[in-house]
Length: 420
Image (tube, rainbow, N blue to C red; front, side, top):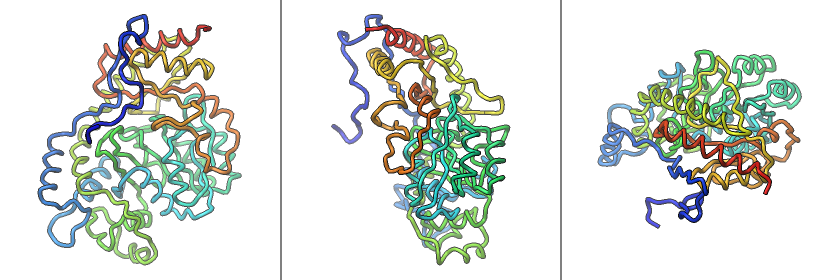
């Protein structure tokens, strides 16, 4: 295997003898990404030629690329501060530490999320307390209210999982009532808003991803936003600024750093010059990418709703989502869903399932995270995830692709529902 290739998670392209009798065949790679813009490539090449890939410089004029990216992104979402780090998981970990989370503390978090979210809590030495998920894939506000009152947690790490946004006005009101800090995991909602306001700006801290499969692509990367001087200073110090915090354009006053610089560890989680250089030109593409993704979502939604047993939740009018993927529920038993997935693969379509007994590739659910020692029975959440299917929607999908995906899902669902 060459250095530029990776083993496929799904089955290799089957021969004709392995294909479904109906002749339907998709075969496109749904994990394929858009090319990096030429302006970003040119800047990255210039940096490589200079050798100045580190996040700070001891001498020289100007600001490093991460600092420029922070300025651009803070302006984009309307935040006072932004700190660029190595991943969204790193941003969440730093957020928790900046809010004073200590070893043994409890942190409320979403039951429908991906492994880096409880991983960030575990990294901080804390214990996740999982909140139920509703049938529309958002947080159950009644269960949240109960656990805000009874858990003893002082932070709620809310995941806008796969771009499904919980009523942020209601969440913020509940958190404020109980004196709990809200941290938003916006790995899947860059560019999205609730009631005209960017996700990530409703609580104390917002965390975003620049991973290849998200809205902007540096391979891996994260952004933390806040309006809090003390949080920003701690985040800058934790990310690994040494004592070079004046190289941040968006920097709290030196008096704030004086409070924190002797007591804040350096976790070496700062974004590199190279990653930031790749990201800056992509910010200007977010609006058009969002429109394209939502157009693809609408085409797929209309076709998937016609498939037997498929349901897709209606979106709230205040939810200005950016749909880089689509989720749907399939009213079948687990063994039938396994057959559905096999039927889709026979037709060249790879779909993920959140209800599998074993974690697979990027997909897992809270039952797989055995390091969570206090794990209640979450009846609603498991009922939702046991039937929850997940499909990436690359920007390259055409109307013909969406039509074909709809046909394959309908055929596979009908076959899976038929007794063997």
